[in-house]
Length: 531
Image 1 (cartoon, rainbow, N blue to C red):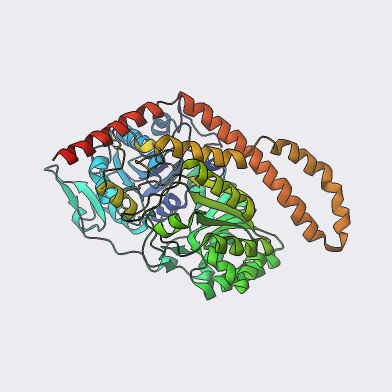
Image 2 (spheres, helix red, strand yellow):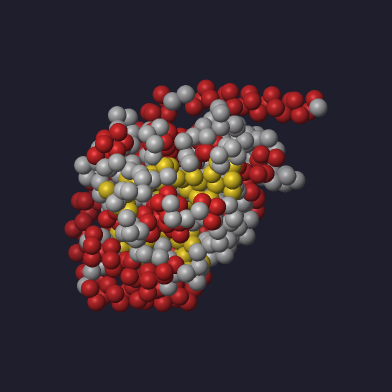
């Protein structure tokens, strides 16, 4: 426990760096994760605590950087010693880095706490053996305050709900389950000034937690819970006033789940921007079938929601059924066309090579799958895309199913750092091989993000004067020109990112590890047959 004689204590919350050659690193340099900021903001209300957030992926304002990646924690601890360090485990690929930093602080007598989606019950023992003293299971805003009271000596540890730790006998203790937060308006507004060293361009905000879609591959479950519309406007206005922000990402898993209140939010947001005479830019994640709600789409556009990220998942009907997506590929194209008509920029998210459930007879070679994806993406006229491999994330039904089938590659061979959607993590359905799955994604992405877009950027610049022909409707003309210019810029930037990733991939031992993992699966399956 802490020295109770200390007048002030410090809590440092760390967002661990992505692995060295993660494809999302470039995007992460301009934003941060909302969860750690929410937890830090709640802890900052404690009387004797100074709180800070260190995002290792965004150290652009004089951040002390380590030799390889992330922050220089030796320097940080000498400059501003932390008494308690919290770790954000929301992204499985960052877990090896999280454990490394946790051991660093634990070896120096600092109390370590971790939380996030990665820490499903099956991963708790590993975490408690890897430098983490306490695991917060579920939401952390209330739990962190109670834990800090424990460390101050003002509360008994067993009264803190929703945590796991080792007792004096080294046995793992799970306290009573913490109920999900219902009243979000009682929580403090996230304070992004607590994020040290970061240069944030895209600010994450939320109104709704939870998702009732119950997708097999997703860790987000449970009935949606809402904060008030007015509180959401307050959050946005505070960020705008203190940070002069313009770009926001509403991180709700599915925008529009509370339909009438969502429209009211959009209308208030529209009026707010008119009153302050400043146009803001918002991106959201939304269900494809919301294209049928034209009133909602119009309200969104008037509120400044310009980009929608949609989980198309797959253009292959059999895979959509396996994912519990009750829609046909031809219907997807029709709904996508509606989003285009309303002027949205569309970011399409796909999963390649989703494993079929037991009893489903479906077989398709990699070449045909790639062809289906390319044709669909072209017909849908998507502005940007993201194609990932299915990941058996701990706690999901997909993980449990693949584990029962003995298809998941052991993390002793293929470690957590590869859990970012770009690496095969299980034995795929026949006739696919793991190598084919990964190579297929690179072909699809490489066809979309291409070097040729560099030349198109130049053509777009030269075509700018052509806007004079749209003087009768300059807004429409600008939208057409901007969309083309933006997409070519992003697609060329995507080509650079993929090229850099491929260069680093060739130097990484993943393919050798993959062979060992496949051998392990084969040997295990043979033993099961023999027994």
